[in-house]
Image 1 (cartoon, rainbow, N blue to C red):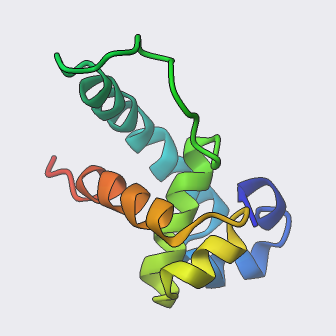
Image 2 (cartoon, rainbow, N blue to C red; image 1 turned 90 degrees about the vertical axis):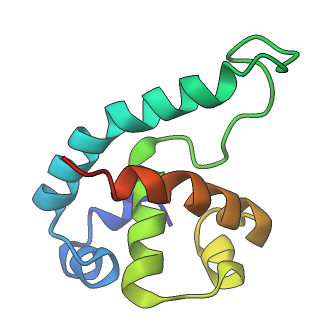
Length: 110
């Protein structure tokens, strides 16, 4: 499951994510700069051996996929195992780390 496939099924999208596609797109557009900033900060630590861009890439490539994962988690309270199965066969530890990175971005105080 990813944003591209689920966005074609309007009723399922809102049931799984808790938002309409328009609301989701607006939220993604607002939060993506915060995600980019947090990733640059995380990857710019002094002890890092590789340049930014080196290393493994996220299996969930787009920010929309990552945001959809955490919204589905909050809406349906699925286990990390089941979320991993649904979202491109990710390991539960990857799901846990991704949610840990996304939570501060979702709860930014404006």
